[in-house]
Length: 111
Image (cartoon, one colour):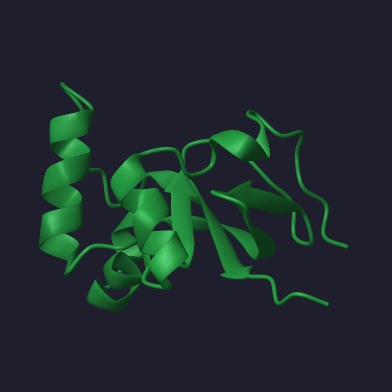
């Protein structure tokens, strides 16, 4: 296992907005970027009774995001994602060198 720092928030707070929950349930969202570390690989969380597993966690420069990454976040493209993030966080500037935690996840298959 990689050496990760202590989590800054609980996994149940990884995906909270109803539109993002719906995107994850539909299979359109498979990534979540956060300033802090919310989960470790192998941990699970539940959205509306459906279990998801965190498959990877890595540190990433926000400037390294692509349109494909924004789509995996549940947005049509990077421009829409960036605009929304800046509107959500008043006074924030987009800093390409800013580091975020990328949490990748998938829906768990029933056993």
